[in-house]
Length: 342
Image 1 (tube, rainbow, N blue to C red):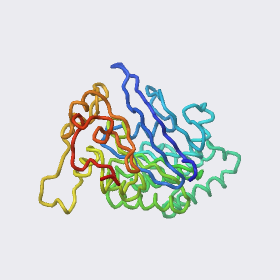
Image 2: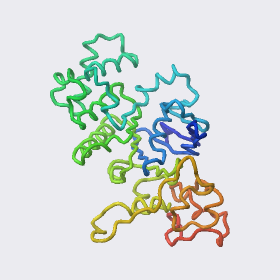
Image 3: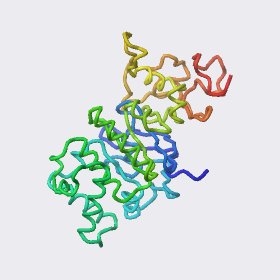
Image 4: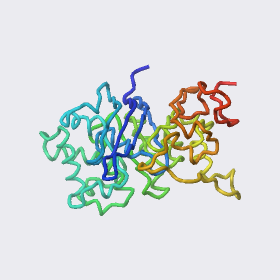
């Protein structure tokens, strides 16, 4: 098997604030292989967008990567100079942000912004006509009708779904190996969401573009992803094949997320909810960050943080699966058995 396109190993990110140093990500590990779609899912505030920004060092000024590695095509992005990283952005890894209206400049036409993007990433020597034709082709590819005319329009003259398509077109101008889609469908209605997801799958199938899809929507993750990383309080609490995790989740948080999704099987019953909320970065508990909300938590869960453990092709961060603990000290759950084990 070939080496992963992207390897995130032990990533640690903090934010420096007047209230102190806030740990936003801790020991995050996962891989994305060529042509693979990997999802990152979790509640608001769990670190999903921070993770996406950290990969290309697009953190806010008070954000800092303080540990770990981000390896892309054999290079550690965390150690690259600004000039070297600029060559990776756009051409190697491209990003589609959550709100296209704030990502696009309202004072310039879509065409001008696309041409500027091409020039910024190494195609400035080509004529404006050549760059414009390439931009029109990119817009046509993502489903913008009459692209040759509409390229002269400003962002506010497009619908939300069309603006998201434009952002995807800009991201694909340089045929990146990896596309990071950060909540790319969260501001859209279900019809437009389905169209954007279909477009992402087509891009993946036709061009072999790997995609890191960040979302709070489990349905979106289930529909398009091959693997999934479940985030909680800046930690990857479960990671593995999407079918395995959705069919038989190991972590109590993943199980609680899935139980809270409306489904025909639960019609007429009270919708499940996770008690409490994601802890503040200002006051993270010392042990497992999910312990205060977990029905299975025992003393060890509040005392120290669990390690990430390999179980049946998955990775899970929970004392339920820690064989080094005496049985009397471990949490108990009848479903807490790794796949393939008795």
